[in-house]
Length: 132
Image (cartoon, rainbow, N blue to C red; front, side, top):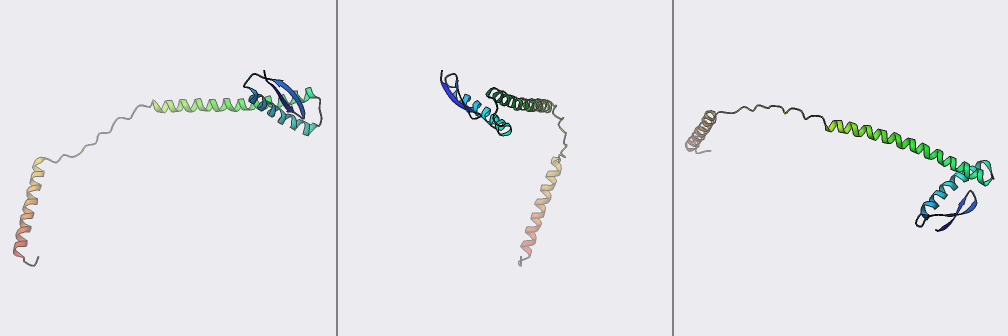
């Protein structure tokens, strides 16, 4: 079991931890040291037990505030997921019917015949008018 030396509030402590957890211990000690440093800056030198207790309580307070924020965020996420599910489950609107006028074949045939006559007249006109 590794022995790690940590400094908290200007005091050095030897602490044991599980193999591979040294990083977590150092990180936790750093957080505790930051809180202890605030205390010693405000109050001055205080007994070791009191300093550790107060620093631990300050961290616990921050942790509780973060847990409250996390719960609020989770509640909002649940609400948004419910809203999203509700939107996903909305039935599709009925398709609109669009009516397109159908031109009868007789009209199309008549238009084609008119176009052919117009072209024939244009050809006749061009044949009579050499200036064109």
